[in-house]
Length: 159
Image (cartoon, rainbow, N blue to C red):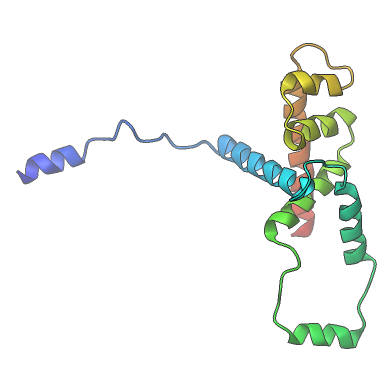
């Protein structure tokens, strides 16, 4: 009986999921980060993305422009650390900053229409300049590739 059980246990499971390729894993990670970007930019109360530039500028200016006096800094070091923003919000701001550095209008508009406004491809095509036919998926893929390049450059500079 043990020989029969061992033989059946050794058979491969035909319903098992195949291993995920690294490219597909990166695509899923990017889709999750861009969905997070939509949630951060839209905010909890509104669905519009018109406010994203203002708070991003405020955050950057408050982090870069002002320095604290030494005694206030010493008091803050003595207190327990409390994060100002969650990791999801910080990642959403990083995506927003990378999105703003994209040079091409069509790249920015394609990403904004697809991930923030969640428009279908037919509507995205109306927002893009000089795109005809079914080339929207190519423009979105190019925009995602350019955004990944910007994010990789930022992460390399940070480390």
